[in-house]
Image (cartoon, rainbow, N blue to C red; front, side, top):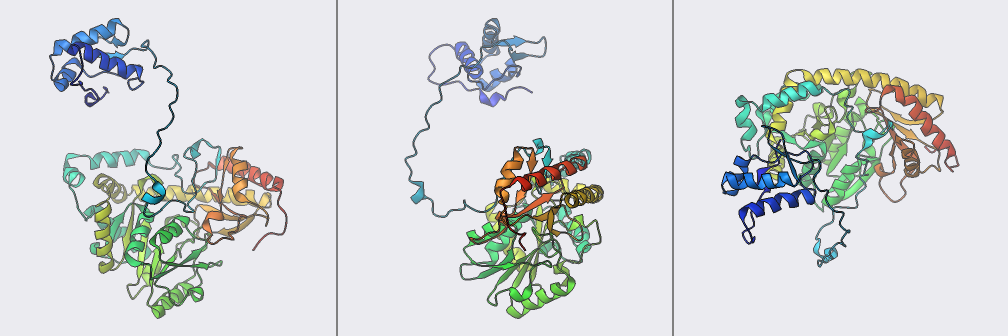
Amino acid sequence: MSLPVETFFLHPDHQGTLQSQIQQMIAQGILSGRFRPGEKLPSTRKLATHLNVSRITVTIAYTELLSNDYLTSRGRSGYYVSRNAPTPPAFKKTEPTKDAVDWSRAIGQRFSGGQTPRKPQDWGKYRYPFTYGQADPTLFDHANWRLCALQALGQRDFTPLTTDYYDQDDPQLIEFIARHSLPRRGITARPEQILITLGAQNALWLTTQVLLTQRRTAAFEDPCYHALRDILTQSRCNMAPVRVDQDGLPPDAIPPDTNVIFVTPSHQCPTNGTMPMNRRHALLERARQMDALIVEDDYEFEMSFLKPPSPALKSLDADGRVIYVGSFSKSLFPGLRLGYLVGSEAFINEARALRASVLRHPPGHIQRTAAYFLSLGHYDALVRRMSTAFYERRKIMQKAIEDHGLEIAGQGAYGGSSYWMRGPEGLDTVQLAETLRAQGVLIDPGESFFGGDARPQHFYRLAYSSIPANRIAKGVSLIADAIKAHPSSGPTAN
């Protein structure tokens, strides 16, 4: 592929001939490092047309650069940056310019400083990645996703690919969610009650913005998905964390003045607990008594490979007070950033209007590609393949944990992709994670999942979604050795 012709410009104030200016422009590109050895230059015809000069002018400039070994010619293929071209000089690092703006006063609202931890971008280079939420490239169906993407780029789909939906979504994706995804959770919804989002986190943000104000109260699980806590903090609502037990959020502990309840009943984050049916009914009754709304984040229900998943809380809702959050990002790949909201039409209308004012709609090509991948059966095949792999990895990890005497604080009875672990009372898992990283091991410290000032530091999460099965036992062994070597003391916490 040639260097983009748009990167070449003639300076109107340049002194000298057009030929010399073209030579200088290309030479400077090579010396600055913008044009690299082996890269192809635009053809003489294309560059001449772009610069509005004669083709012979460009040809003479290329020939001169060729004689000075800046360029090389490959027969009929064209001109390329020479492998022997002068290398860019090593410039002395310049001091950054001072900003004249007082940003401590200029910034009206602050969104940094949340509890969402930063994970290494190069996690795939670590030999023992027990980190959560990353896709395993050996399990994903690259070939069929690529075919679906190509199909979405075809002439037949030109209109949905290029049309501005404004505030609407791809009708094929909406139809699949309504007819296939939601019925599996016992949910019935019309297209007007479904909104596509950029992942579950975007869905939670839209919901918070629509439902909460500074005068309203949100109850949420503690520990919980750390990004949710950040979102609630930014909304400036009154926040009421409720400590979970082995069955999830206890309804009786929800404050009576709560307006919105955020919950992960099918797979509590991060403890992996599943809310039993009697508590689900009790939660609905509690919300009914308080006239509160419930936001159900139903993540990872697809990974119920030990036994069938419980019905979604939304499927038990007779009042329309449950708003359902679903996502394809966890089961397909996290970079997809595709999720959806399901709720009463009045709520979806407001969420749709807010989304339109921020990003209008998720990209049409991504929506149509996902629609093809889902409707052609590739998604179900992928989930089956992932479930089989996760089941085997879970068995290996369970045995390794038992062999090394580590303590499980929470494990999904239905499946999932991680274990919630408890270390000795004095263990600092943030420090532990740093120690293990030097040994090629990645874990998720548990501190960020808790709220308040006195956050427990001895919990951590071990995921098996992206680590090969044959490395799990050794990785767990390294974790156990690091915990034993850690200067901690005291009994195990409850």
